[in-house]
Image (tube, rainbow, N blue to C red; front, top):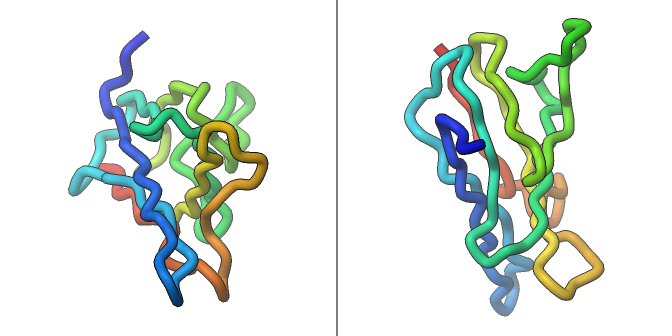
Length: 114
């Protein structure tokens, strides 16, 4: 099922002196009750974590869904601004590249849900 928002999660490759990072291409804002799917255009596995200021996604019991993968299509259920940390495991790789507070703090973004 296609989502209302297909969020591309780009892997910015490492360069000398920079370990690389992962950046979602987010719209200016998204609307509550719309669906979201995250994907990496190179076919890598995507993981999104909402651990800073809550998650816009909740399960059927009202609990926040804090970890989302590229296998999920979820509905935005809460309004607000939500910081995410992003990770991509490239195809044929065993280790994810992504958010780390010291090595790769740029791997993430802010979801604005109205």
